[in-house]
Image (tube, rainbow, N blue to C red):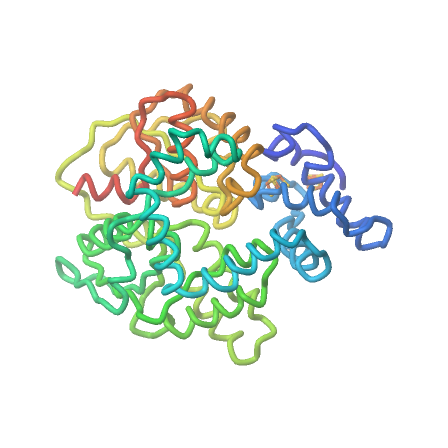
Length: 405
Ligand code: SF4
Ligand code: SF4
C-alpha cells in the first residue's frame, strides 16, 4: 500500500528521520532482498537491527500488514545467511546458546556481575573514568542491579491461597526477572495469593525464548517453548501467568512457533489458550479491593509487548483505578521507550534518543509514579528518570497493588 500511515508511529523513524529506518522502508528492503535486487549485506542488516520490534507500526497499519511476522522471518534469514563480525558472533553464541537456556549458568553470570557491583570494583571503574574511556558508561549504568537472592530458590514451590481458593496458576519466573527482579516475582505471588489464587512455580520451567525469537534463533526459541509446555501445561492449572509483557507475548506465540511440530502443535495451542499477563488475569477474575487506597499521581506507560502484541491496555489501568490512585494519561503512552529486550545495549545511542523523547511526554504530566508492566521497560524508564532529572518512582503495576495490600 505504501500509504505511510505507520511512519509517525515508528520510534526509529521519528528519531533518525530516514525512510530506510521506517516500517515502510524496511518492508521495501525485505522485498528487494527477496527479489534478489539487494544483497543481504551490512546495510540491510543494519536497518533491520535498528528495528525495535515494538510493533507500534503494526497496530497503526490500516491495511493489516503483519510487520511482526515479516520481521521475525527476516531475522531468521539473517541469522542463517549473514556472517556477523567474529566477536559479535562469539558473544551472541555465548549469551543466547549457553547462558540464557541454563538457569545454572545464568546464576553464575549474575553472581559475577553482583560481585562487580558490590565489591567496590564498580565504584573504581566509574570514578577512574575507565568506563567513559571505553565508551560503555551509559551501557554500564543500564545494567540491572543484581538481587541478593534469586527467584530460582522458589522453583518447585507452591504458595497457597490466603483466602478461600478461587483458582490455581502456574507462574513463569523468567531468566533476567529471576536475578534482577526477584522481589517483583515475590510481589506477584503475594498479590495473587491475597486474591485467593494458589501459585505454583513449576520446577522444570525455562526462559521463555523471547530473546532468541527476536534474534532470529527460532531453533532455540522452539526448544525453550517445548520445555515450558512440558513443565507448565496441565489440567491442574487454570492459567499460566507471567509478569513480563515481553515473555507473555512470546508465550502466546508458541502455537505459531510449533505449528509444524507434530508432537507439540496441539499442546502448544492448549498452552497459548492458558497464558495470561498477570494484569489480564487479575482483571479477569476480579481484583479483591485492598482496604487501603494510595493517594498518588500515576502515569501508565504501556509496554509495547502488552499493548501492541497482546492488546492488553485497559486492564492495567483498571487495576490502578481500583487502588484509588489518580491515573493521568501522558501523550503517546503506548509509544516504545527504547528498551526492547537487549536493544538498549546493542543500539544504545538510538535507544537513548527514543527514551529522551518518551521522557518529554512523561514530564508533561509530572507524575509521582510511572507504572508499567515489563521488567525491561522498568529499567529503561528508571534510566530516563535520571537523565531527565525527574522526581518519580518507576514501579510495576503489581508492585503498586502489593503496596496497597
Ligand atoms: S517494529 Fe517499531 S521500530 Fe520496527 S519498524 Fe515497526 S514501529 Fe518501527
Ligand atoms: S505498513 Fe501499513 S501503514 Fe505502513 S506503509 Fe505499509 S500499508 Fe501503510
